[in-house]
Image 1 (spheres, rainbow, N blue to C red):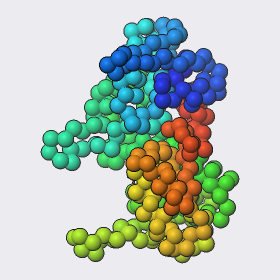
Image 2 (spheres, rainbow, N blue to C red):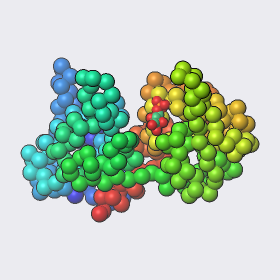
Image 3 (tube, protein in one colour):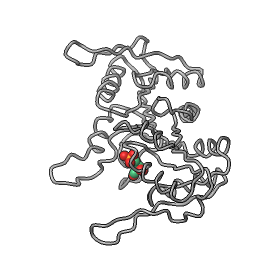
Image 4 (cartoon, rainbow, N blue to C red):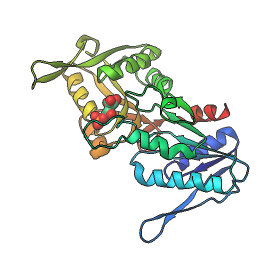
Length: 288
Ligand code: R5P
């Protein structure tokens, strides 16, 4: 096995290789003057299980790179090509919501047929309940939940967890239970066809607590922002936004910080909030 760090994930790829005591190589990536991707393996891939590590937030260029890398590895004689995508893109569009739309997750599954194995962390699944039903290759789905619980347990005293919607609540509850604290949920209540209000289900659980809002993804941050407002109304002492994948579209990180929240994420997407390391989780999966 060799570990190859694609352009978005070299830091974590190096850590994974170190933990596994396997050789590590950077994938050399640049572009032609017109923007086309050019890449080169600097190692011998022949006969190897080539593990390509590439996270897929802001995915388009990263996707082209990792798909080109996979075909190239096969062409160079790799025995097996494994994709480690700590954050997996294009899963949210899993049906045709409006006529004529593409169903992105199915297209991604087709593009990924080049991989022999796919490993990812907390993929955002809705109607399709497991990645194995989407990708027709071996898939390993990991969860960072225990690491989130561990973070709360070791760093946040007197904590209460909030799941920002009914869908994320089971997940938040799971994190809270392992962290040894209580959890509540932000609920949408519809008063009429045009009036929807959100409300904390059990505001008394939050009063005077260090509130931890737990979600899988922070993208535009709107979900977190609404939950921060409700937490403040209910008398939270301090507020943490804790997520697996910190995408921070629309400049949402400074916006959340401006509201007084401390923002913590894992390093599935490298950045200034990546305080929780998933390298060990991935290494264990690669040992299997
Ligand atoms: C929703 O289903 C997810 O669990 C997240 O709550 C959502 O993706 C967050 O998006 P945003 O940050 O744009 O509100």
